[in-house]
Length: 327
Ligand code: ADP
Ligand code: NA
Image 1 (cartoon, rainbow, N blue to C red):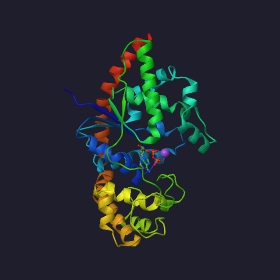
Image 2 (cartoon, rainbow, N blue to C red):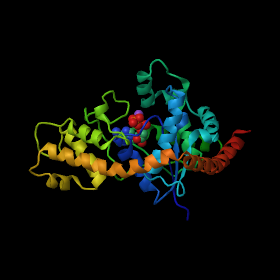
Image 3 (cartoon, protein in one colour):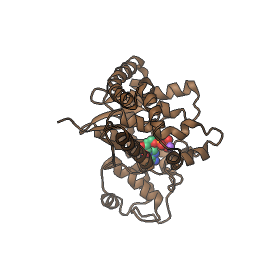
Image 4 (cartoon, helix red, strand yellow):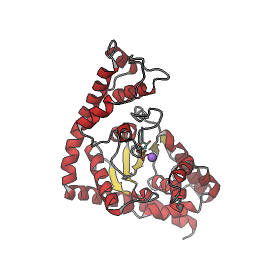
């Protein structure tokens, strides 16, 4: 029996944060053992927001290198760059014509993003969920690992798939969400009520995958906590809860174990321990990244071998779709 297929993509719009890593990417790596994984850098999605071409090209390459560095295995998984497989844009058009204006208008991410980028509310930003549906449906993905912020998009992909299957005949696999076993929602170190994001103006709020040990330790030392001075997981202790989440994700320790470990210690000791755990986790990844980013030929070999493997699957799906529509 074939393994179930998992599909996931991430935008290459800047160096990944510790939130991206612990919330998504670390899980991508783990899934490779149990599933046939198809991963891609969603560079078509990225231009829904204006990109500076040279920086964009550089970010795509460094995101590719970072994904390899943190454990995406280009032999085991298909790991490609979305724009190199033309079927994504082609299927997206067909799906655009099978998605209602009203459905897209209800997407909360569109509302958020158009408020944030009020000077560039382009049609791509609006129909983004159709491209995402195409990404998923092209590969007959059984599962899509999703964070809470993407539930609505997966629901749309499922609805469009079911609608198409109903209008014509069974064509698409209707994908299920895969809620990661581990992987917390990581919050800003400066405002632990907001998620950690690289678009945060306060750069002390997020850790990137390429921060130096010194930067990491400083950011954790400055992390906003509370005045109780007791390491325990509780309501109203967002800062400490977040640090415990990070520490737990990296060490695999439970909250009870962490509370025991730091019994009688102040926040200073705890922050140092969390910082050191992050430094230890990222060290080997950064070392590998630094080797890979210098080896452009190897990176090119990986993505140029992956694109035709992806395209072979995508082409079959698109051919079926076109035929059903009447082309
Ligand atoms: P960003 O907000 O940094 O631009 P994206 O919205 O592009 O990140 O998210 C990429 C992936 O990383 C998604 O799967 C998302 O759920 C996950 N992710 C992003 N930020 C966090 C976070 N702070 N905690 C956990 N997961 C996150
Ligand atoms: Na985001």
